[in-house]
Figure 1: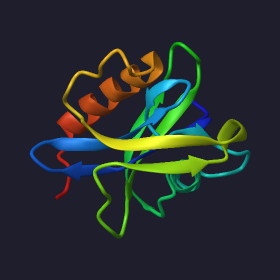
Figure 2: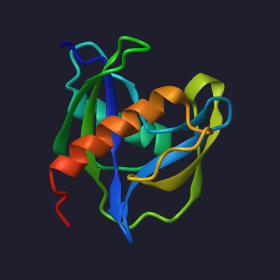
Figure 3: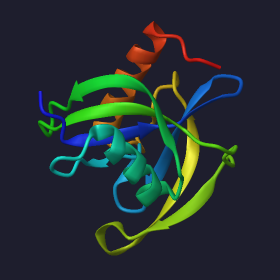
Figure 4: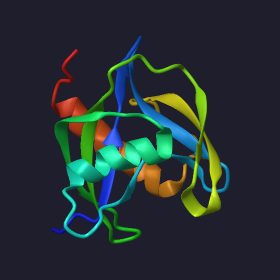
Amino acid sequence: MAVDKACPVVLRSRETLEVLAFAHPLAGLQLVKGSVEPGEPSEDAAVRELFEEAGINGTVGRNLGVWRAEVTGHVWAFHECHVTHELPDTWVHFTQDDGGHAFRFFWHPLHSEPSDAWHPLYKDALSFLRLGLTEAPVPG
């Protein structure tokens, strides 16, 4: 399966395991994700997308698996990404994507069901992550 999307997964453990997510002003709640450029390793794409969409410098840790989105046919590679500093509970990052948008970042409890505000594609992606992270312990 050829990977064409990279999803950097930033996790934090508070009272529960949380995953970094954001509110897209036009397309609902989402995870950071973007296209893998021709010849680009998905790990590099994950780090690039994390910076472009969230303004965060990160490094790749574990490979969290590959998932085929039935709705779009895209194949996503999930990579846990580590950051060198603690991130705030919420913030806004202005991205140049699609002519420029303000993305509002927040932490979603990984084992909570996503609300209807989540884009359906990302609800499925969260289900994939929940299953994979339940089976493999997260280093703390």
